[in-house]
Length: 142
Image (cartoon, rainbow, N blue to C red; front, side, top):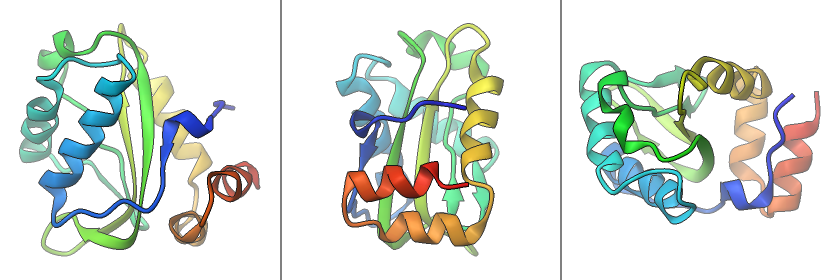
C-alpha cells in the first residue's frame, strides 16, 4: 500500500476549469522539486490527447512518455475540490491526483493510487474532508 503524507495533499482548492487545475497540480509538484516548469504544458498536452478522467469524481493527470524529461523525481499530489471542477463536457472532478513518474514508476504509482480510491462514495467523502487528518484517515479506511 502507498504511503500518503499531509505534504502530498492540498484541501479546499478552487479552479474555474480543468486547465487551471492542471496548472495548480503542476505547481504543487514543482514546489516539491519533482518536476520542471514545463510540466504544466505537458499535462495539458496529455489531456488534449486523451482525458485522464478516471470516473467517480476522480481525475489522475499525468504526462506522455515523450515529455518524461520534465520529471526530476517521482511524486504525486492530491488536490481536493469540494465544489467540483468541470473536467470535460460531461464530468466533474472533486478529487485530482497528479502523478509524475520517473523511470517506469508510472504503472505502479497509478495503480497504487487507484487502489486507494476504489469507489465513488469514498471519493465523495474525501472531497468533503475538512482537515488533512480527516482526509488521511478516510483514505486509510478500507
